[in-house]
Amino acid sequence: MSEQHKNYIDGIWQDAASRKTFDDINPAVNSDKIGAFPNSGVEDVDDAVRAARRAFQSWSRMPAPERGNILKNIGDILTDRKSKMAFEMTREMGKPFLETKGDVQEAIDTAYYAASETRRLFGHTVPSELPSKFNMSIRRPIGVCGIISAWNFPVAVPTWKIFPALACGNTVVFKPSSDAPHSGALLIKAMADAGVPPGVLNLTQGSGGVGRAIVEHPDVNVVSFTGSTAVGSKIGEACGRMHKRVTLELGGKNPMIVMQDANLDLALEGLLWGAFGTTGQRCTATSRLIIHEDVHDEFVGMLKEASEKLKLGYGNEETTEVGPVINKRALETIIKYVQVGKDEGATMICGGNVPKGDGVDAGFFFEPTIFTDVTPTMRIAKEEIFGPVLAVLKISSYEEAIEVANNVEYGLSSSIYTQDVSVAFNAMHDIEAGITYINGPTIGAEAHMPFGGVKATGNGHREGGWEVYDFYTETKTVYVDYSGTLQKAQIDNTRDRITIPAQ
Image (cartoon, rainbow, N blue to C red; front, side):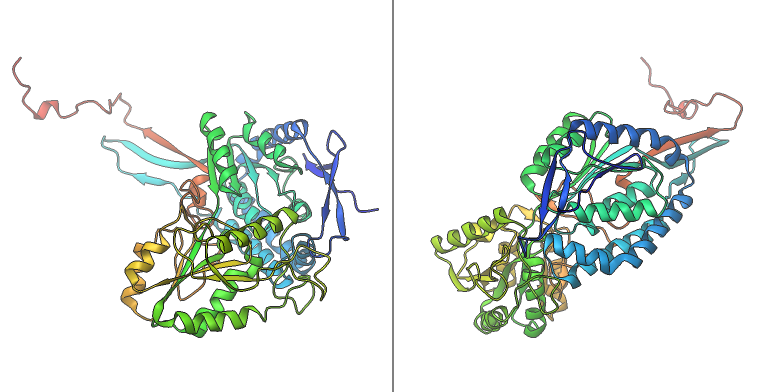
């Protein structure tokens, strides 16, 4: 019998009110059942929000550096548990062990960064226009934050949201993806063990209905979501209707531009990592290669040879370079897009199949796949596939490269390989994306830098870095008048110095 897991509400591990559960399986070895998890409902969300609302009073009044000490403790515990957590994360969602270790390390970095920011929750002091008066602004926490996260970075991405929210004095109700519930539970366990008080942090497992209940709950003040653009649009509509603050981190169709003067060996190494790391299941995955015609044939030949050598398998096996896709539905979507690419007239130069034998029959695997002769209007060049499928587009100039790169609805990450400093600096400005890498692939966020995109990738907010602390706080303006008299601001105080026109 598989392990029975629980929600975490008000400091207590407990079943869903309905006692219903759902199963979590290993996408690489489908016979490996990780456990049964609570299939929560509205009642469980209500309990979690009430607990978070009660806890907000004391948590928000705790000195921010004291909250920072708890965040540091979380970083220490995650450091101690990194390898064990990474193993279970790979077992649950598929990416190779070295990648899941990096996922936990990003959470560790975020914990320590958030801990330090609790001593830097700056406001402003400014001169008043009136004598004997002091003006300042301060940050205040907002309330209960609903955190809804994706499965592909099941520890790192939630911490981009949860740690700043807690640092600022908010409380949290967290719903991990139902494709990575164990990773979410392991994160919450580490945080509880680090001393986060009961009610400050609550975990409600389940399907999309749980997320909907969090978004629509009247006592949830802030919503942060990472996932598909379609779902994000619905969340944005609901939050707009209810006047809630919301941050949306959505899809991507990220380009890597390789110019004629690029270091091709460096570009190849970056492209393999960007396109096929996490089996292409990243919002920042390199899904389009935009390459200059002068080096197109040479580079595509190098790329085909290297891609066909990538080792597929279970991510906890040392030789694995590419793991499975997350589930059967994702596999079917990728198969559909490969057929779309063929029907549109693109040339598939490698991959395109569900592999057989060699330890991959038991899971949801798909070969790294590359299409050439892709035009900018093809669906495989414009739509997010979220799998190991790369579209190659040939261009003849920098101007054409920028036009092709910007010819999608998304704008998350981007990169350009060139040794021309003028081209590099122009690209920083010209590419429509929230992130641009020079001579690096489109993936690889750092915890102390803002993360997010433009256009249909999100709604303009950023996660990570210093900007996220603006999102999780309200600015309060404070005036201190110590003149002992009524001083009327926002009236015409210059009347004694001007001539009033005759009536």
